[in-house]
Image (cartoon, rainbow, N blue to C red; front, side, top):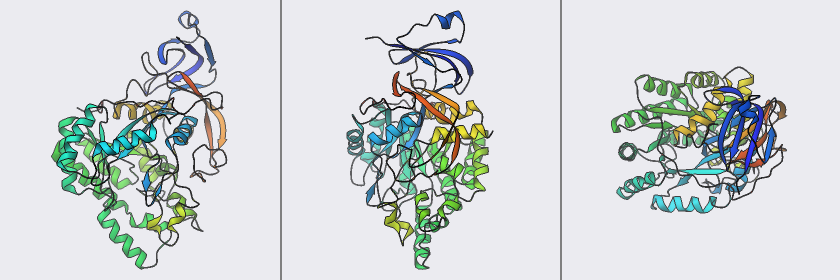
Length: 467
């Protein structure tokens, strides 16, 4: 059965254009756009009409960094693929790229198969995978080639977490060399984990056990040092590099310098680094544990540098690093020892609204909002123009967004499976009203109409920014 939907009267905002246009959707894809009120728009006929007068019509968000059901520190991220993708839809995100994990001693394939098993049939929106490479061996390098061929085109490595995900410089170099050959993109968690572990041990020996010390031992200089080292290793390998969750002005400066030198180096930041700070980590009565993530929250003065990086395009993407742990029973594992607090924040539902708040406050333009949250992540991870834009042939992942509605963020009203909000009490202007995923309404005028299993696995091409 063919189905047609027309969205009338809204302001269509993409990374490149803003136009008052009607949008025709046919069989899950964008079929045509026509300026509102023109004969061409009037000729659109459909089974379903959505009135978007006074609203924005934007592409569904692409969140290139989530961790559903991720094992960490003896527990698991509290959002499943079912709850996490439902919450993403509520927040106007229609595609996630999650991280499958290779365990030490196991193959990439085993890790990827395990994540397929977790996600298949459970997602409300479309999804894809990156691969965390924890064990660089000859077999692993050969498997990287196979994964790129089948649409898993990015590989994450960690300079942090010795004994868990950590790779040394030689392992990183070998993986980068392989990526240079097979077209893959290396994503890097850039923190000097060996040095950080020394500082953790010393802080605990001094009796410094509160959550705020998590931020103090994971020093900005050690993020900058690792970022610099990752850039140079990538340069030696002739490989592109994408640095995840950039939190510090010093690390951003390393990226900017590399980009000025013409290197294929890219950077992502997250809403928590733009809106939260070490003030949150220092909240009394162990409340600061809610804000423990790595890279850590930084002193407030770093925020201005990150916003500037987003304006100058030294940072290209805002993802969430959504990795939620409940305060009760999970974050509490680190009472008396900050190093045992599971690292991660909830945020997959908040990203689009927080970035729209930045538009309201004049920090970024509307088109830049869509660029950093939809179009660039889609291009970076080989999903564009299927995802990330509103254009003929694209998947009909479309959000009707009310730019005037006001909301107060709260754990009482969010849909993430976690018992607190990192933005509790924050007032924002702008709210998702209706969300279509491949033309199907997942949120319909603030009611959830989606279902587990609608979301499908989406293989990716290679990074679309490479020279």
